[in-house]
Image (tube, rainbow, N blue to C red; front, top):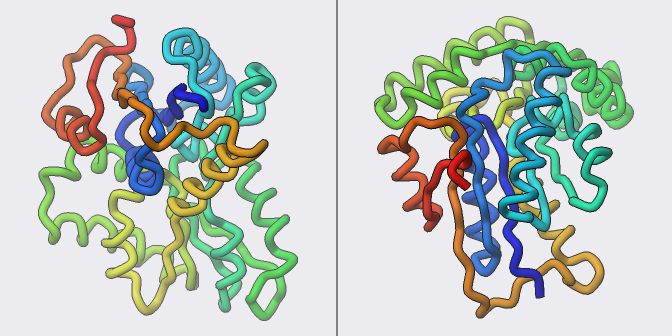
Amino acid sequence: MDKRPILFLDSGIGGIPYCRDFRRCNPAETICYCADRRNFPYGSRERTELTVILTTIMEKLIKTINPKIAVLACNTASVSALAELRQCFPDLPFVGTVPAIKPAILASKTGIVGVLGTARTIEDPYIRELAAASNAGAGCETGACEIIGIAAPELVTFVEQRFFLANENEKNKIVNEYIDRFRAAGADTMVLGCTHFLFLLEEFKKEAAPFLTVFGSIEGITKRIESLLDDNNGVLRTENNASHQNRLLLSGTQSPNDVWQNMAEQLDCSVSLLDEL
């Protein structure tokens, strides 16, 4: 039995959907969600700078909470620094959250796949490499799909600062701006390539139908974490009756606002500042 927590790390609230889904499926496991508010947003940072940031915060988290699995609940962080973090911390299993490009390519008939993400994710060669590896089984007539990437830093900010205040009309309006651009480019599938955008997954699906099929990656990440827990006869699993304390950690000195307090209640977490640990 391993009572150590599973860590979910993002620059803000973007990774909450992954954490929430995992907890729903695995209520006995202890979770720790860390929002690196001090360095928000990750998407505008260069790869080298972001790797240093993530390595530094991961060192502190290993010392303070000693996780048994670390989930980079951020597409930008995963695309930019997952390999380096695995090399720096070889004893800690990492789960990356990469955009769901493969299923989008396999489902495309027009041969054009839209990817909505941060600038860092859209510009990274990894996206094209992932697409090239997935094109072998592409469903489009040409046998190879074209990736149309749109960087949407303003949508990250919307989710982080406005989502819980916005009404449905406002949410639908902002998602349609991107849907219209992908439709104009001829795409028939669309990937939400930033974890923040998963808060708007249902709005994207509803507004995009029937012209675009929208892909996220929540269920796949939960299954990947579960597979690591079940390896080696479940040595990393926690017993169902074990006591645990879920935690929500925030970097920076600003006190948790109502949004974070609400998130802590949803996840049944205590909330505290990382710098005070």
